[in-house]
Image 1 (tube, rainbow, N blue to C red):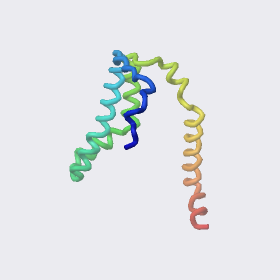
Image 2 (image 1 turned 135 degrees about the horizontal axis):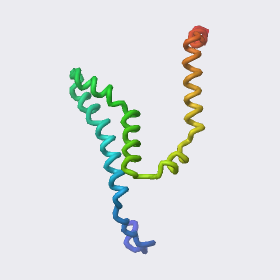
Image 3 (image 1 turned 30 degrees about the vertical axis):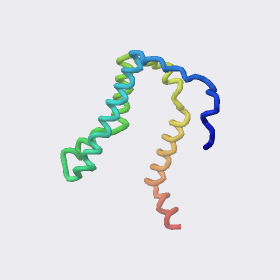
Image 4 (image 1 turned 180 degrees about the horizontal axis):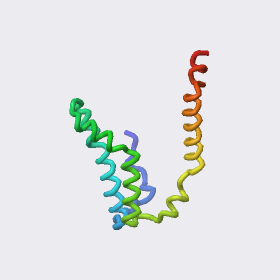
Length: 118
């Protein structure tokens, strides 16, 4: 109907190279961390009355597990740490940290109550 069979191929798709050892180990570390975060959470959603599972999911904090994943990547020498630290947006992290400190300080002083009441 649209005569797509008459169109010429623009270019051939090249086959991707096979993954090397570092890439495979990186995928394994990322998958392990992801599954460690997701499996207990999904299981808790299915059985919400399980007290033991609630305590396990509280202990498996995603931030902490991602930190463990980063440590594993350093131990397995999956990347260059100096190059990785150069790519981190430190100015944004410091800005968000400083903003959260100012918000906590304003709550403690009572500024939030005066803003909400007004």
